[in-house]
Every structure is written in C-alpha cells, then in structure tokens.
Length: 288
Image (cartoon, rainbow, N blue to C red; front, side, top):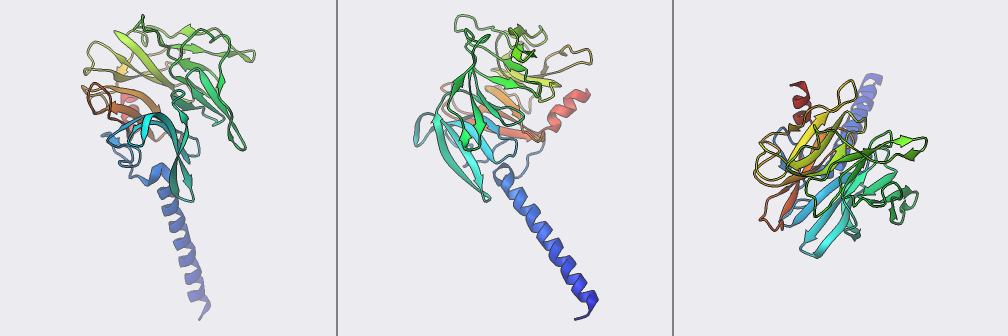
C-alpha cells in the first residue's frame, strides 16, 4: 500500500470517528429528541411527557440531568424525579417527594426549590436547606437566580391573588430586602407566577392571567432596557399560549430552547405536559 492510500485511510478513519462522536453527542443531548421548530412540541413523548402529570422541568448546565415533577401511573403522589444520562442512556430515579419547583442556578451549584434549596457537592446534592432573612415570612413558590446572584421570585397568598414578583440583589455579600418589580410586570389581573430570569438579566419570563390573554394563564416576557428598567409585558403569542393553562417557562442552559408546562387535561390538571420550542420565538419578539 502506497503512502497516499495510507494517508487517505487515516483521514477517512478520523472523519468517521468525528462523525460518530457528533452523533453520540446529539443522542446524549435532550434525551435524544429531534429539535423542535417554532411550533411547540411535547418534550420527549413517552419518556417525559405522558398521559399523566409532568411539570416544572430544569436541566443542569451540562445537560446531563433533567429534573421535573411527575404524578400518575406508579407515582401516586407528586414526586420529584430526575433523568440522568449515563453513557448515553437516560435513567429515571426518584429524588424525593415534591419539595418545590426546581430551578438550577446558572453555575450549576445550587438547585432552588422555592424557599428551599440544595447545594451541589462532589457526591451529589446536599440535604435540603431553607432561605433565612430577609425571606423568612415569604411563601415562595418559584425562585430563579442570575449570574449576579440576584433572586427573582413569586409568592403565594391564598387571600391575595394579585401578589407581585419581587427581586433581591446581593449587596456587600448579602441579599437585600426584596423589592417589587415595576408595573410593566406586576400588572396582571391575578397570579403573577413562576418567574425565570435570564442568566444575564436581559429578560424575564413569567406567567399571569391578564386582559387580552388567550384564556387561562399565559406566559409573558419583558426585556430589560438600556437604562435598567423593564419593558412592557409581551405575550408569547398563540403558538405558546392557548386557551389552556401555560406556566413555568425556562430556557435551556445553552440558550437554544424555551421550555414550559401546559395543561392538556381537564380542570383537574391530571394531564400536564412539558413542551419545548426553538428560542427564536423569543428572539423574534425582541426584534419587533
């Protein structure tokens, strides 16, 4: 065999190995699912989204763990579960009973669970901890943090359906007393819930019932202006929002996809699925 042929064989072998690695990486991402376009699709049908209740998902920054709430089938009560990628095979296991809505910090070191949280250690997640002052008396449902450590969160008061979304910055190493976001965000008829802050705080997602919406709870977005104020609330439109209940949006750590929950069952919410859609649906709104 001459030198040219040997060289060609080596090049072909390297090219094949590269393509195989790319294919394997694709299979390992997002549970091996085909990426959606600008029309939302149920995420991982039969694996994540089933005929039962699946709600409030979040990925670790390396996209190797997907946490969410599941109820139905073998899970009689709401259960906190995780799908982990082990050698390109996704395995489901139980984390605990439902202890809060999971949102992982941008650096992957903290899993926020409303008012509670867990810290990442070499051996896994720590025991459950709880936020102290200045959050003692606030019943937080969902909390999301930015790369600056700022908390954005809702709260739940049964007697007050128009509770605001608030934020708390880190000042001199400690979180300041929470403050309400402006009226461009806290202006719904009721239920300003489940905020998700972009890592760089360039936009915030949340859901609410507002006049001019599509029926039940819709998902909204507000973009931060150059002066630091928040722009008007923008409904994500009829591709994301329907007459059903849509809520708990988040963006994947790589910034490629928007995820959210949608009720596709009855008013008893026995069948809620997690949907995903290309992030261009947000980028297109920003350009308008």
